[in-house]
Amino acid sequence: MKEQGSEKAAKKKGKGLRRFLIGLGVFLVIVGIVAIWYKNHMKYEIEAHEFYDVETLKSEGRSFDKSSVVYMTNDISPEGLDKVYKALDVTPTGKVAVKLSTGEAGNPNHLEPNLIKNLVQSVDGTIVECNTAYSGSKRAETEMHMQVAKDHGFTEIADVDIMDRDGYMKIPVEGGKNLKENWVGKNLANYDYVLVLTHFKGHPMGGFGGALKNISIGIASSEGKTRIHTGGVFSKPPIDFGSLVTNQDIFTESMAEAAKSVSDYEGNGQKIVYISVMNNMSIDCDCVSSPAAVDMHDIGILASTDPVALDQACVDLVFRAKDGQSLQNRILEKNGLHILKHAEDIGFGNRAYEVISVDD
Image: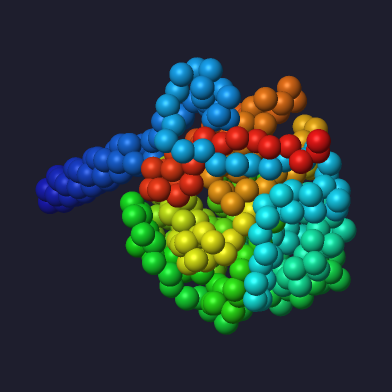
């Protein structure tokens, strides 16, 4: 009897082991399939950098359909800012929104209020922002965001409006590959004109943060930010998980598409202009609370009615800088140049540009 009991126990144990091994095998196959899918899904090709100023394009025999004008000064001061703004020869009418990044708490690299004060007040502008969508941010909720804006000195120079404090509105995306609509701060509808003041710098996810990012991620509500980061798949913050399963090119393409939708909303680009300040440049964005150290020289202030040309000009200046290696690497490793290619492909602006100095 004892031997029969032992034999039954051994058979039972053997069956249990076989079930475990079969289950383990199935699990490993599923993991393998998911790993292969993830690797293929997340793969992206890094595009080589090429200069797009008209002189270089002509000298290399490269064709371009159209080019845009970018004004530039090496004078990073309120006077220099005023010069490039006046070169744009625009007259904002109605209620003016001044879109900038208030900067994450602890980040010292954001635009200095004293630099922009005169210009913001000359157009009677309201500084506008939207809440963030990533974990750990001090700007994820309106009250905290306003406190950061106050701490960084922005409330001293103008009124500040967190545009998605009361939710979002949907605006259409024309010609989008990933997005059909863009969820922006509801209060954008309260403004007649937008002056975009951008601190150009690196970005840990997009490669660089320029004018296109400022009006796409920057004007999107927290839900809209999540949608841009995930190509429209997810809409509930935070962006953390969604970003982990979104191809890098889909993210940058979605930024370009969202940016175009904002320009279209603003009178097909007639009610929005762009100024970018190239100073205090780190490989990290102003949204990072403890950014990498600034390791390249300040360059100047650039302005244009075409954000694609403006971003391309800023990128080209980084690639011409002898001390720009770390930021160059950040842009390339994140394939940050793809946002410029996609923006031009969907009919939003020109990569080709001509720089006109206002310093003469």
